[in-house]
Length: 519
Image 1 (cartoon, rainbow, N blue to C red):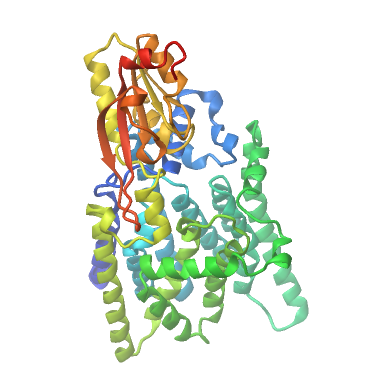
Image 2 (image 1 turned 90 degrees about the horizontal axis):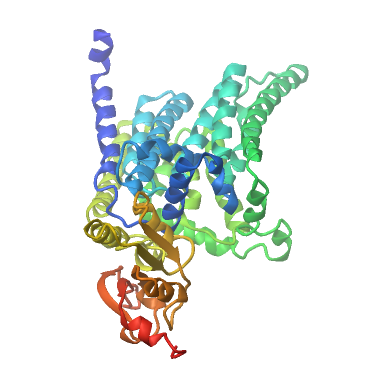
């Protein structure tokens, strides 16, 4: 063991450094406000933890529940539910990091390639950002990488046990999110790694064995997916998937819309959040030693490009996180450039990697300290920082309600919020989950008068509050019987408009204003 450390101390130190870079993801993990889907997922996990009969609750919205199941144990470890949800994504990111490092070594037999790919993943702002969000995409990405690893080992070594492990990984992916279907469909690309012979008869048996191993993998994965049939809303997965994708006939009627604009978006996302030097490393990775490693690079290219192109063609809605599970293979291609042994070229590669790391670290630092300054793509900045989907102020409002209720333990509290599902009211319910004396309800979307639920609550003598985004409130608060307690600004949009989340108490004038048919 001592001899091993002596011979490989530089690689061991490099590995420790990469892990240190990765775990900066835990710093200020909740600095970004809760996002709409995060609020839903964490709230589902809380409900599922409280009520055993609702363990398949996400199926009601056509979502697979594995990510929410994994959040549940961490509620015992962390008091902040958002931190618990995001911690699961950090762990999934760690699984992806280890997988990328291992897969790089298996494919290229080079510790340099393995470390380079690990460094790129650890600091890449794209992965850095989403590994810090309580969303299922990091978990899907991890399962995809390990499906690739075990499938490769199964085909390469003619091993049924590895095919079974690949099946378990595929099943985990399928229990996480529907795009796991891509992993199943791309399993035949692994056959290229088989030990092909020169005569046709032998190759027939090679093909038969490879196909059999892939069938085992797909069968186990699909079998695990069918666990979801235990839930009463299993059919909703297929139904909701149709809300997000065009039918196959779309390619015949309008093949370049939205293909062209979505592919352009992918280019822009990776340019900004890659950041762009990763393209240079990827091109060099493909070009250098292609004849020697063409199988590896071809298959990695397929696993990166195929899901991106298909989603660009058929997706009705397309955001950056939808390509997260494709990025590990681009990163490995970029890392493969470091298999080159020529000194002059190696120095150039180190320079490009250093330039990449410098850009990425600056971006990551902004995400850790002031996300509003980070150079996020327009679609991501609007959703996570500017619009109703961004949850600035929700934690602060929950803390205020908690303090008020603690100071007035005998009073009943009712908090009405805009919306019925999503950032509000799920965000507040998530933070006030343990406050049984506080009732949080959604009461609508656009308001020119106070919702009747809040009027009736005030008449019943409850302490009543209203939480709404400024853009959804029409008319003056005074005329609605509201007293503003606080406001929480979101990021400034390009048109210089700045939305705010408003917290109101419903005052005693409501009873007078809304009595005798005056409103």
